[in-house]
Amino acid sequence: MIKALIVDDEENARGNIEVLLQDYCEEVSVIAMADNVTAGLKAAKKHKPDIIFLDIEMNGETGFDLLSRIEDIDFDVVFTTAHSDYALKAFKFNAADYLLKPIDINELINAVAKTGKRLGNQLSQDKLEQIINRGGQYNEEFNKIALPTVDGLLFVERDHIIRCESADNYTTFFLHDGSKIMVSKTIKHFEELLSEYNFFRVHQSHLINLRHLKQYHKGEGGYAIMSDDSSVIVSRRKKEAFLSGLSAA
Image (cartoon, rainbow, N blue to C red; front, side):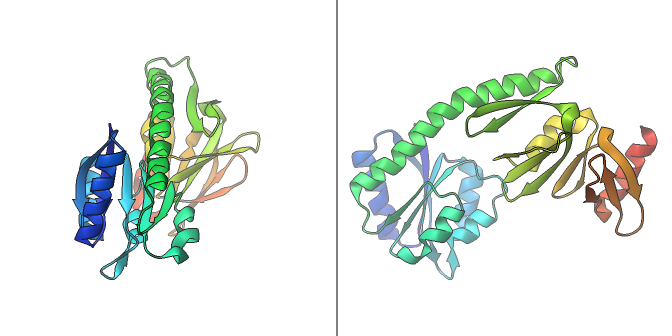
């Protein structure tokens, strides 16, 4: 079943979407509904939906406010609104679809089908990614990490990673040969996978491979120089643990 969350400040609108899903999308189970951004955020964290049907204008806030407060958006977003002028901004948030009220049944069915297809593909890829990445923790000879890309999984040697940099829900890997790989997962996910392999998160947005650390410039605005001559800020909050780790190494 596809787990759905409906977030809309109008009771009639929530009820209408629920009925349409029950009548035309049997594979969908509405697990929760919310009438504002705060309640929607709590419901998303609690129920972990596969898809959210999200209104845009809600009691002085917007659906974009809800999404901006979620670190790792691992569900599809289908905006449901009476306003067409938010479409461009919606797709900048990687919206799966944008449905205008009153909702067209065929458009609703197509939106749900996209999520169904994604979940079918994602299950097999996620399982393989988990086997590779978790297996590497028990087999030191396997020095690779599996990175999910649009085309599938890309296997990269850990020692070839110089650093990782995050932006919203994406992480960019900077490799020793000058190439870059962008992945649609948060930096926190990769911190958990790589921290035991001499990777250290020196900043909210930066994870570095200590094997590629060339210099450290101390001071209140301390920063690290990596093997590719890139500079990475070390936050004040991380500085003590970072220097302590270097001393112990």
